[in-house]
Image (cartoon, rainbow, N blue to C red; front, side, top):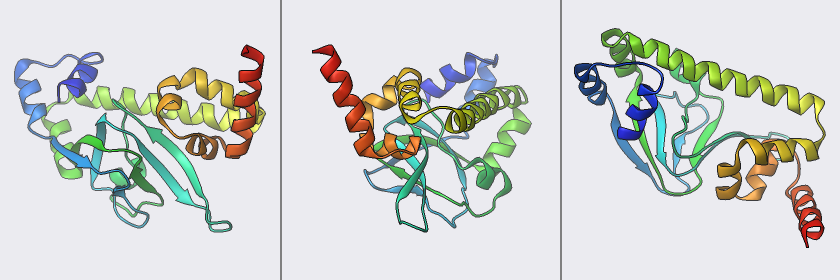
Length: 194
């Protein structure tokens, strides 16, 4: 809980009473590697903050059966289907643990109560959503304007921690390229540096 509180306190001020109250709304959950946090068709009942581990959010391409990675989440990131959580409607994608993952979770009803009792948290979650929206907008622009190699280098620069922890086939899916393409780029870079 301390890492989430540290993150919150970087953006908003909370009194000691509000900090204690905030703590009371969250529960810890651990997922085994391969275990699902959310499946397509289920309602996202909890907002989840990753304490440690890696999650992937994906859809299955109905034409070829491949996973299409929507996002990857590591330590101190959020992993939630925002539309499903906020509207309490069925999700259109899956969220699954890539490795053992420990989360802090808050239910939809507890989330609403928490915001009601600690109004300054509205600002915190607005800041988080603004950052998420900015990331999505950048991804849309890059997918339409940049070549695959440029997208890969930007990913490495923007998300070095993810690149170090996630298998390359997941990065390839996230970028919309083949794993073989990434292997060729890495091989080319290794040849340049030797």
